[in-house]
Amino acid sequence: MAHIAPGARRVRVDGREDVGIVVDEGKNFGTTSNVYCIGIYFPDTGEVAYYEKGRERAAKE
Image (cartoon, rainbow, N blue to C red; front, side, top):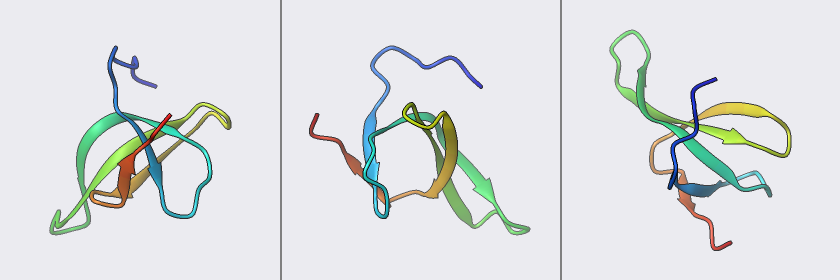
């Protein structure tokens, strides 16, 4: 996994209760690269998942 930059955005995504940290601000998926996603690390589970850009919202805590 990539190094987590100081000041990385803390976000929430629909369908999850835990707060994640953005570790990849953008990656295109698909054969035509028309699905733009961001990588989010969830420290509670150690999981890194990609979500479509715009599904994230700033975490309040």
